[in-house]
Image (spheres, rainbow, N blue to C red):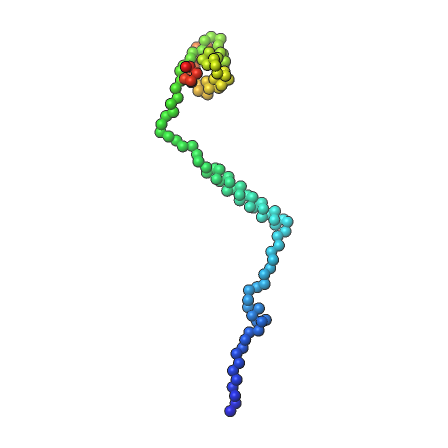
Length: 126
């Protein structure tokens, strides 16, 4: 009778190495590659910041009217807006008063005509 021998095959180190994960390759980025990556990151950050700024809180509308109170003054012949401002608010800077009158009356310039009726903020007519 012949003897049967049983041997268990064990894989060699070379066989195991061929079936394991591939060897690691070190990634090297060139100077140009670093510029491209940094530019892309910079654009991404700028886009996010711009989006946040544009989507920020906007104006909120309300259903209540503002309490704007004003009086009217009639311009005399030969008067200028500076003289009107000096008369209605002698303690204030006339440039500020003129600016408020121009904005309130939606004037295109500081020229006024005799007999013209101007709205004046109530804070100056007190």
